[in-house]
Image 1 (cartoon, rainbow, N blue to C red):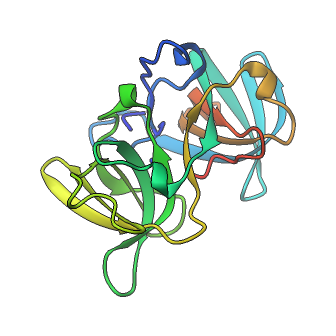
Image 2 (image 1 turned 180 degrees about the vertical axis):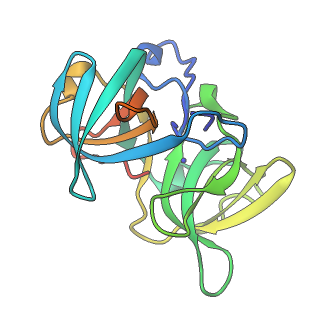
Image 3 (image 1 turned 30 degrees about the vertical axis):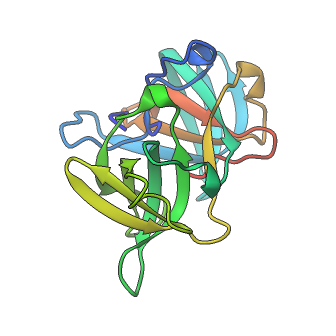
Amino acid sequence: MINNILPALVLGLTTIASTTLPAAPVHAEDQKPEQVHVRGSIVTYSGSALKVKTREGQTVDVTLADGWKLASVANAAVTDIKPGDFVGIASLPNAGGGDGALEVLIFPPAMKGAGEGSYGWDLKPNSSMTNATVADAVKGVDGRTVTVSYHGKEKKIAIPDGTPVVTIAPATNDDLVPGAAVFIPAEKAASGPLAHQVLVGKNGVVPPM
């Protein structure tokens, strides 16, 4: 849903590169700094600092690193997922086998391969994040089930009705208003979370990852 997040995000799209995240959210096995995900709503924003009220009810001061990047998300649909697309899907194991999606992020083409793999995720207990390519037309989108491939492996993930499906969209600092929802993949630092990228909700769309 990433060697950084957004999921990771090194976006090469010339029209939105300056306003999007540099990488997709991920937990790479060789990643050095300990990662922390901040989910919540903005209390205040000023210069290089964001104060966020987290979903757990705590207030956290996030330091924005030099050159930090900003993006938002826009609504998409299951029918927008096509074979060959690169997606990030947070999911939980289903009681009957397989996985059920909690959210789906459709990456822009320039981000294909960002954070490829499947690894533990902290959206919910026992959840995982799979960044992978939608398989070919035969195994690809089948009703509300998608088959994805990564590192020579395949995984089928069901997408229940009501599952948030989004894609990356532009944002500006003017979107960092009190109350705006944010997802921030950050490094754990002595002074608090240090962020190189921020994903902010706008137009009623909340970052679901």
